[in-house]
Amino acid sequence: MLQHTSNCGKLIVRDGWVICPVCGKGKLLLTRPDTAVRNLPRKCKRCGQETLVNIEAPEPASIVTSA
Ligand SMILES: [Zn+2]
Image (cartoon, rainbow, N blue to C red; front, side, top):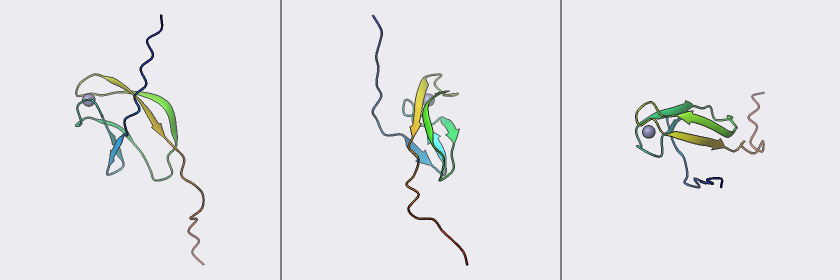
């Protein structure tokens, strides 16, 4: 029997860092505004819990073009 745990909680991103949702302190991954991640397992250095990081790609609607 597979253990299916779907963590639907929203990830906290602070200063570009994905914050561990388990302990709320560990930094899991450094992201950029255009970073897209799908089911990337990252282990928190603080609490040791593994969290799947999901970051949807932003819509390419607001493309800044400097003339
Ligand atoms: Zn943690």
